[in-house]
Image 1: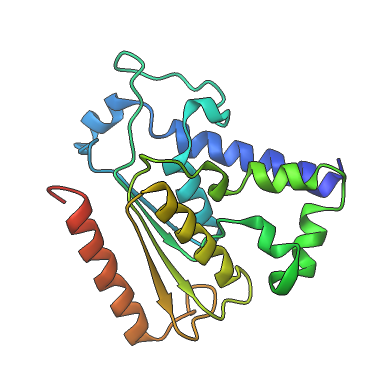
Image 2 (image 1 turned 180 degrees about the vertical axis):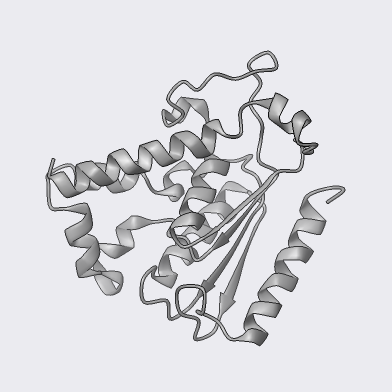
Length: 201
């Protein structure tokens, strides 16, 4: 494995450990007066990817580093996921119209690159029974191809999971990816989605 990929894999696993394990201790929920039945995770770009992985992974997927649970080993469950243009299918970066030279360099050309991108892609973990997911993605995003969001939406639909894809016409990538009206519209759709899907929110 080339060093750039190895470093990235370690970084991802370490970050995932703290996001997933951070959902485990129920005593923290009580300490900070958090309703542990209404936890919504969200993130932009790479943070969107981590929000998806945090809400979708189970202990059996092997990313939790055996983090200790409390309350009779009952981990907290995410109530919903809000993904702002986080990449859900890394395969689109390495082939076809979505190919990105920086992604080829980042992931590397080692023989196990296919296994690597499959391992870290949220679309790999789509199955029935996931938390509701809403994705906001620009259809001209130069960094995270819109095709990734479309594929992810289709996979969730096929699995019967509650989800919504909010497409931003001409939307780019980053904190200034959309204009003010598009951003307000996206937030309105997010709040409507969460109100419908997370009781008592």
